[in-house]
Length: 385
Image 1 (cartoon, rainbow, N blue to C red):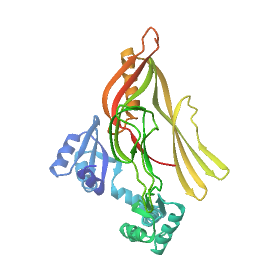
Image 2: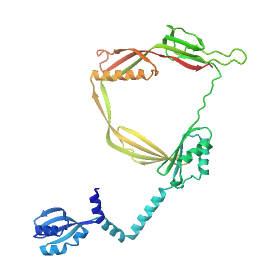
Image 3: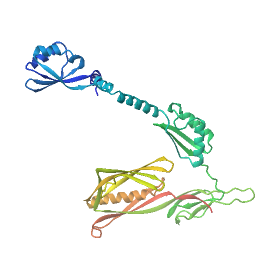
Image 4: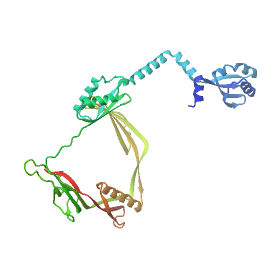
């Protein structure tokens, strides 16, 4: 709403219907006395509508009589009329005030405390820390200091690497992450092959090599073994080496020429389930759609009580025929994505070969077989059992 329109609503205005034979004289006299007539609309011979402020409306009497016209109020708009109506309904006004006060009070206190990422024991300790700090349900939000909460929980609860605290509406959300201490292996660590490959580079830094450059190895084969401790007070030696191998990966993908498309129609049905122990109460409608997508939203209402909101979106299923060229592009992209998903981060692609199905053999689809040749680090550390 524009500022001018808001100010007019605060002051209040009326929409009047003016009837008479000298409407033009009426408008001219009103303008001469600086009485604002806005949105003047002619309804027919001798009749018009106009918007005028409450103060200006009170000055129209002499002008109407001088022009032989008369005016009736068609609509009253603005804060003065709203307040006047509320004043006549004292109980409604009183109830509205009570509602506003209760809403203000309820939105200024803490309603929920959610702890994410903690096990049962840690959650109990965190809630005890919050209780000792005086932070419980119904605590005023103004007294909830997230920085103090983070500091106190980090100091009081052992085994936490990180603590996050924030208020969301009338809730306090705590996210924690536990410390993960690496276990030092007691047994030697061997390097094994991650893929069937041909060794192209081998540099042993520690351990005993079992392969040589140019040798073909199978996935899981030991490449370099760690050594057991020798002599009293000896230490376990873990294998360390740079092992690069040439790897060939294959993937195939088939795309039919008749493609099924599923498009939402815009119709949806919402159903609620309240689950409490063995009680499962369904509210709302399932929709009765022939095809649909489903989304579920779950919320805990209390101990053993869960509210589930189920949205079903109707789906219109149509079929479209695509060309063999389009099918080839989709199939090749799918096969390539499948291979790339199995590559290690440092893999160097040497070549890619492909084989496309013949239309005479496969007329209703296109199948693409890709073979990708790479050079990559194939050594994986594995503790000896």
